[in-house]
Image 1 (cartoon, rainbow, N blue to C red):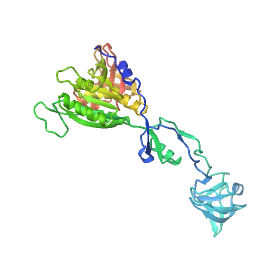
Image 2 (image 1 turned 180 degrees about the vertical axis):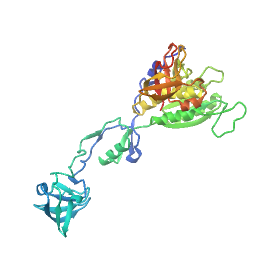
Image 3 (image 1 turned 180 degrees about the horizontal axis):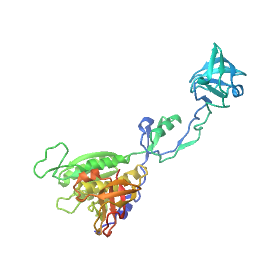
Image 4 (image 1 turned 60 degrees about the horizontal axis):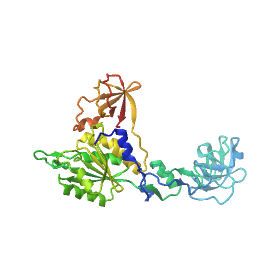
Length: 401
């Protein structure tokens, strides 16, 4: 099977992918979820003319000049109404958030008022007509479209929804990705490896990538290099309702690479296998009904790079979430060799120097080296057959942080 270019692989991976159906969640549980339906205001905010400050509610005509003597005829606090009407040269003591009494149209702040006796005040400074009053509907009125479907709900959006009187919201279901590590050599973190054994790490990076785009992640553990062991975990993923199954390792061409055989026997139709990229060439993709199946390489860095390029866009689209790779222009901080037929993703540090970003590749790019991946600020994207380039030459980088 010929190597598939990266852009073609992504195109086929995303072909026909639509956001999942919606579900209704309590407002308190809706943070970072994606709206499936627009938020239409069910009330007006504020619902009445309200005081924006502590002070006195007055008629603007009475305080156009200062000093002004007024008679205090009562008091009103937030959550209450004043029963009377403010007349000429009268005032009502008012507190922030309280409804403006009938007849009043202005609030004089208390710092500009002197209390003369029990029911008389002197306004020391002329006040602007309508000052310190929040008009009914200042924020929104009933029927206003406040947020569109597809909006990712942050803290302020939740407050807005609450103010619009929504106790719950319709949001796009979060896609579930199930990860399955494969290999007799693998042990979970915290284990003591024996001869020939290593600690399994790839699943945690994949799950982190999934959660960064709002997906749920379920790690089903490590399957031994046996068809029955891998098949058992694949069936667990299906039973759990996974939208995407990601296998880690075992998707290459060795005698013990059984993932493709198992997934095919479980009903997967293979779409493509092997991509013209480095790291990440042994990448597999297929469909098992509505479930997308991805076989990631066993090398840790290849697994992370493929998660960035393919898993995150897929899960974001299933979750109705906008996603765009952060590609920027930069300058090389060190020389780089000519490339072959595969698109190369070179780990590099990224620094701002003046007005330019400078990407300096790590000298060793072995795809087992997680330390450089964890400290890389970007991946330098090298097109197939790109010629050698010297330090200072322009390049494109995929920012990782």
